[in-house]
Image 1 (cartoon, rainbow, N blue to C red):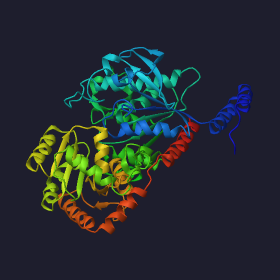
Image 2: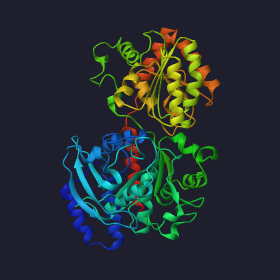
Image 3: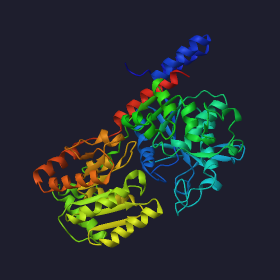
Image 4: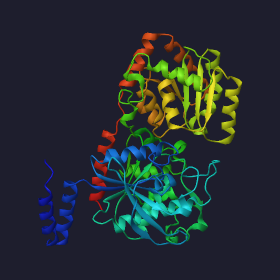
Length: 505
């Protein structure tokens, strides 16, 4: 069925204004079905400006993909990289203080590709060095409750006030920093539905109960059906309690978090949402820049047969490793227990013993950073490490590596295994969450059943055998590079979900 013209929609709206309430509600539903729903995508980070992890990459890619299905606009804090990007920022609203939440302005900019972005302009909260969540030393900001309450309250106020003729049909909030939006809308009596996406349940945004008044959370909400979690405030639980629908970033993770070992204490509420039909797993994607055939910086276009070797030589030189034709392993992730970096450190002995090399890029827990640096010092010709993260360097390592190590103890979706496969690096990963859904064991990578050192070492032995068989190795590499992880299917699923939740307002 073709979309109706603007004139026919206008005529329908004129008829709607004269119709009785029941007819108006039915007509509103039909109008929403006929047009693209308006979506406010609320996030604490975006790789367009400031990124700490995978959420930043998703927040840059997904809203753009959604614009085929919806009218999506992005809302995020006014970090210096955004405010001082050189792009014109138009002030479209001034929002008052509430409790201990300071006033702010809302600025709007349009990015070169047409994506419209709202910024919460509040210099005292957001214009500071560091990541979205902490200072340059990795310590969380002490006022994160206020910082992200301001973001969430701004999202609710935009949903209430709109921007000229634009008002969202759905507010899509991401992880705990934006989850309180669902509560503010509920407590203020506004019925715009919210969709909450859980990217990592382990981070819940918990704060002391004494902060209720400062955060403008009514005392009546501090209970089992609201924001209370073992005597504290949980931003994420607010989202779970008040959102119209909850999504996670893979179907496997949606099932896993209904179980005690993955549910982080919220498994009962999440299982209830699943029983109610209000929990959906929608796999993340990656943008087309990760196809080496479309990356103008990649020498694949000049020499498809030798570009991996060229990148490998570059990485070996950059990290001071011996030039070699042995397999090159990579670990590109936060240096945290969840990511299994301890297993990689232990298994590295086997890689070196068999003549391979390893490069680690990441930042995380200070003690783990020291262990990684010590490992590189112990094997300077075989192990390289960079404590920190540079997107260009990471991309070069994906292109250079033969194998990517991802023994995560849990992984809601994971993007690195997708990046790696597109660039011909075979992932070696734990069979969990999105890793299980995106890696074909024995075809495009290797999956281990337990996140334990013995299992990882056994898989590394298999990897060396595969590498020693050029025909098998090249077949797996071709299969990995042939996989697609674009956003089209995911965006279609989100579009259908938005229409569903907007109809039941």
